[in-house]
Amino acid sequence: MYDIIIVGAGPAGLTAAIYARRANKSVLLLEKGAFGGQITFSPKVENYPGFETISGSELADKLVEQALGQGADVEIETVTAIEDKGTHKAVLTEDGNTYEGKAVIIAAGARHRHLGLPNEETHIGEGISFCAVCDGAFYKDKTVALVGGGNSALQEAILLSETSKKVYVVQNLDFLTGEQALQDILAKRDNVEVLLGTVVAALPAQAPLTSITLRRVADESEYDLAIDGLFVAIGLQPENGAFADVAALDDWGYIDAGEDCVTKTAGVFVAGDCRRKGVRQVTTATGDGATAAIAACRYIDSL
Image (cartoon, rainbow, N blue to C red; front, side, top):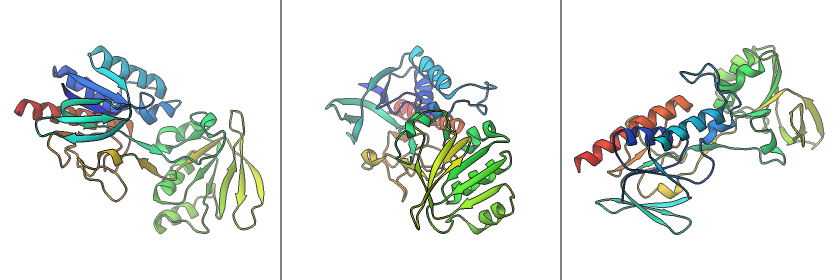
């Protein structure tokens, strides 16, 4: 039996593993896909303390190396359920395995909703971005398009308009759904053009991304738009269904826990983007990882 089982090996989970191992707790990291989470899609990270600039994949590699160097165990498995056994927790996986731990930290993250178009994966991190805060500076004095019309999308568009030469906002509906105050700010920006009733119909087969094909919903006519970068802001999608029995979910599917990272089940904690929170950045994820690990260690020591 492990002291702590961590579900997810993004920045939150890896930080939790580092803190738990430094507290001399045995740790198992369960990751279903690529180590590092969403940060691996960022070609450059310039807002992480200690590094003036570093690629997302390199930052992830350093976190993984540190966690493994501290002695954390790792298994590539998809978690399907967590069961509260009272004295311990049982973590079940898709492969039919069961791992037992005194405490569990859920750090499953949340993935950006994609457009679902052919060739999209080719351009992610090479022309397609999901975070203007992270990557907007790389498109200074360039032309970008942003897909989305909600509050988050409009906030991203406002941020991009401060440095980019031209910003196209592409919205599938005939109106923007974000707050009127945000719409008013955008309307005053001479370098912003809103394309309503329009969707991205196709992406180039090869990188770099130099244009996208747009389709007008009303008449299905298509045309190409020359751009230097494409930002997708159509929401995040947490994948917390497997944890609903031990952690309450809010209306959007995020685990309903505060800054203390404590869930409704004693011995089950949460960290990172899968948690209800206002800011989702790599720094807030690592902060959650530290908080959850310390809380889990205290819980174990109190048993």
